[in-house]
Image 1 (cartoon, rainbow, N blue to C red):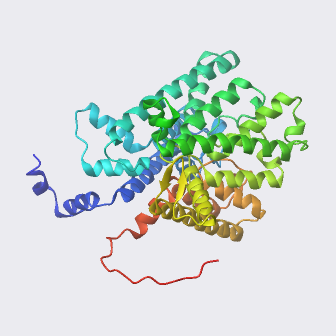
Image 2: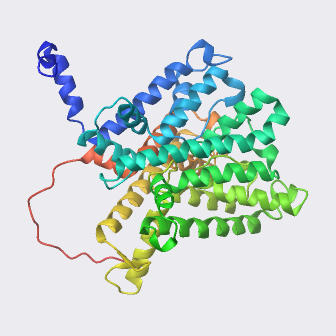
Length: 455
């Protein structure tokens, strides 16, 4: 069948088929996410998906926000979309979070299909994983872990919401928030996110555990699944765990100090317990979760600046989180320390970090800064909002976080388009986008080195 099928295709179809095959893995990945967002927009535009008509731009924005697991919304999710519309968003979140190609591999394996090298490379790009050898095993582990985490999270949340909303509605809410939280999507059925549960230990702990776990990265989860001692873990896993254990408590302490006397946030809460839960939640959520239990618009400007920086750092590689990634940030810090100490290589946990890793981290950071700067500049031209709010919204979109200062629904069509592109670029990864735009074969020409004075 393989021999005669190409001959019965029209020449144009054969050329199209060959063109798709010849696409590089980053381009295929970008195409898959774009098509997924388009299909989602078409489904959300149907009459049975919304209570009132929504513009094409708004449904495309919402679908892109779901596929890129961002959580920025221009219409209220709970009141604007029907059960069917919310279910479409839930599927888009799951596909966008775990990766469309991950499900494709699972289906092929269930049908007995073989995964070729080209498909494995595409999957590697989708998961931001470097090794092809352990890739399929990683996919199996991450699917099991993901579904188990979402299932357990749903059951724990159900203990809170079934008594509050009844069995079916409570169970549905628990499922929606469990999937949204683990995939770091931040979509909420309430207009004020989780502000009503600011002091609720069950909601605070369950939601944060879900999005922190999802934001660690599937390579880390697989490593933890296979190994039991810290010494046996990979360098990447050690850096992710150490960085997370340092960054969240430090951020929590800073939020407590900055917001303690703010009557619109922490000072307005009745007791110490609620203040601690609120600070904990806001310290963890900027790393790509998108939920909030405090009014983001009421935060002190210094806190807004802190959250903006945390969003830029983001979560872990091969995770549902965005940003430049925590390990990228750590590599830059370690490389800077090595330069200041006049060391040839950055060393951590008894391992050296190669120059190609440092170069990749630097490239990701520079491209990200350029993308954020360009988007911020465009919005300062088209939108009449304060600069800090614009920067916050752009960073939230680019880092696929979903926290908002209330600008998204008020943006012009151009502004919404800019944020939509930010979400798409941020989900693909800035370095992947650079490969898409500039991918070429390696040059065989060798140039003599020149000297440039830096600093």
